[in-house]
Length: 495
Image (cartoon, rainbow, N blue to C red; front, side, top):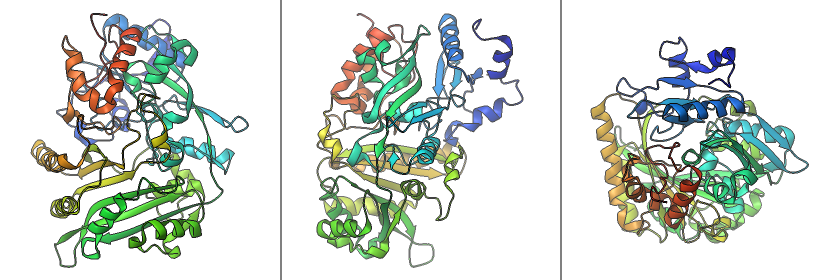
């Protein structure tokens, strides 16, 4: 690493003998399943704060044949950004977090180590009528979230984060810093939904800000099984993707205590974000979804930045500065999965789901409405392919706090049983999945001679027909497969 001055090198290098090594490693581990005595730890953690340091790290790692794992916010659900079965080094991007906003041009350059909370806060400080369409979790790192096709509550109005990215900077396997023009349109296409870590180290994205009204409206209305929740979810499916593009709704299925002590039932919470006022929102909902019985008093008219806090489940009155907190409120173990729904699930199917939720006391499902802008953008526009034809996307969630391999196995089996149960009701050939809801169950690559066939198993689920184009881009841009993980895009060896 001759390009990094000795004094700088000492300040960005952590080995297991360094006093702060455990703190730096743990700071961005979001899933405690991958922070046990059984977890393989990195031989070194490198925390650059300058772009030329990243160049030097990549160059040195390639020369020495070192496996590099790139971590921005640490939210990879399977820990692939900070674990490995073989010796590895973590390139930790959290110091590269600058945000440069140009309100006049309605653009911003955002470094990969910035969090969504920091981005939202900085936009709000500059303008009360601009925003950016990305995720609801403020501690997500920009690098991973954007490159995987991150989405949020403005998905139906403005599409995904990557639909609003206009430039990027990446360090390639040869240590070069390339912008959109330098990397070429194929690579720029790939890192908008195909995952950045297969192609290089994303340094920053240039984004287009979007316009929002001074006030938006949100609501959360919850109904239990006994209050006709199953039928409400059934009805919601028929209108979720057809509502006004300014309106995003989520149906959140989760267990709640029942009326009798020790009993649990299931609840469906309908949560919404509307880029408009409460009167118009109530009119839209009562016309299209009268079964919910929405009233104006159920709604809150608030600023966009307050809606960010609402969706992140902060209590009313929480100051906007809370979005600058990089530590999530939870640090439990979890397993997550995803699905896409193209035809409404029948009532008996939903009854089975609600029963499993109540019985488990831990399973949660989030049904996130599609349609709107998502149906207008072609599957091939970016590497993210899940566009028209989807009513909603499902996120499956299961959290637990007990430690141990046996408890982990038991909980993962509960999740897999639900996923198996859902098979008849979701997309088929392939059964589609969302890259940012990483799921190692759907396939794994050892990055050996058979990498293409291994990767195709998960690749067509994440990327559908875009998978082979991603492979071609990878083959040309990183033919030696320097940038790799257990679910990365492989190069074709014979090209």
